[in-house]
Image (cartoon, rainbow, N blue to C red; front, side, top):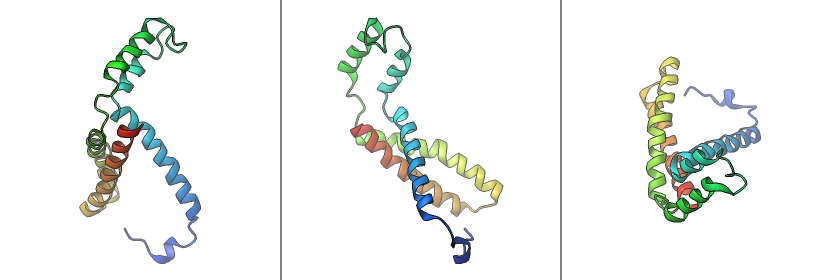
Amino acid sequence: MGFTKESLEGTNMAKVFILSYIFSLLLAFFLQFIVIHQMGVFQTLINEPGFNEETGTAFAYFQDFIATYGDRFRTFQHGVIHGVMSGLFFVLPILSIIAMFERKSFKYVAINAGYWIVTLAIMGGIICQWL
């Protein structure tokens, strides 16, 4: 990547790790909407009259839906599949476009995209199984 020991000196590592943690939380927040399919029903009904007050037909429908289908597709493996798909269909194209303009190598893209695909796969699995 062209780093030298001198170019890395003076980096505030606490700041790097704190920001990395915050950005990882943002990724996890986004990923939950992809790996947990029941979130789609919640998002559809959230602004229906009475839903937030836990009254009305929309809330009753949501309770019945979750009671019947709330456990569907909630496995680690299912989350991994969606994490890998997110890496392939979101991260890989973004990194590739940036790398082309920065004239980076295929190896650069493969290493970075591979890292993010594995990371999102693990995050997706954990979120889907235990959230």
